[in-house]
Image (cartoon, rainbow, N blue to C red; front, top):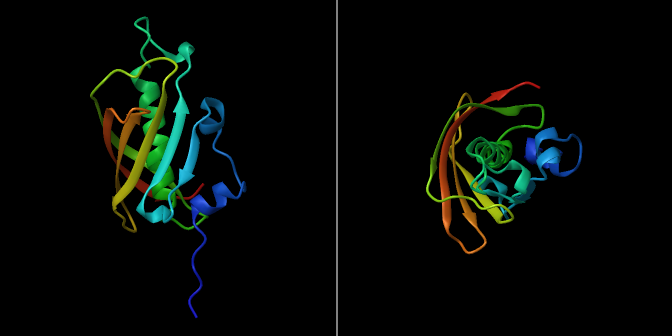
Length: 142
């Protein structure tokens, strides 16, 4: 009988460790029915992280995307490893307004022992696509 591996995402969701950036920003991670197929993260944009036009500063949206892609990768890693982001490309398609609730759905496109290729789409409550993100992560020891 083969036992299923407890993943890094399982350990996080069980409260065995925290991710300080998620806690500080308030990112809410939610696995889908099969976390290996995707993970969702939601967040309401606070005005203090916006630019003078009232839109979320791009680097903060990048942090949100990083959180989602990391969670998706964590579903593919044993609990004693974590996904370290080594590169990310983000295309901003629409502004993200202060006070809006945004959602990222991230999934691993190609899992591997040395590299994981991952993507995320960020939308608002109306389903408008705000950003498309791709990244590469490597398994690392904490």
